[in-house]
Image 1 (cartoon, rainbow, N blue to C red):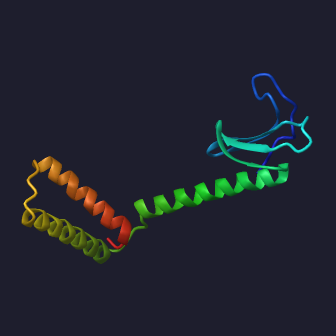
Image 2: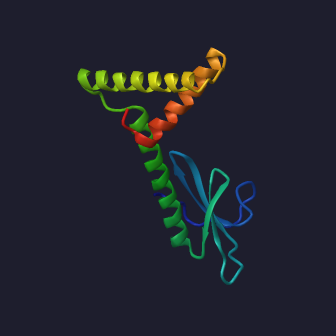
Length: 139
């Protein structure tokens, strides 16, 4: 990470001493009150506070850890939402599992007498399916 050299309070940028680092998610900024004996070093990303430490190096480590965690969250999300290409038999199996799951939910709804308009019923089935999918991540 490429942090700027510490800067003094600067009109339009910060009322406190600060350093910044540009990231793919925006600007990280660490600010502190240098006139204090033991200042806290507040960390924010695009103006949203993400943490505080009691020395500059630890604050930078927290900022980096925050970015790594975000990267991992995005990576997990996109790997799950956009899986690698699979062979045709795998796609057929997943499609069959999906149809079976939706059919089973439809049957349970009909057996329990849920009487929703078709569009609401479809939304409820989709919600139940996504909930099941998130729990199992098998389909």
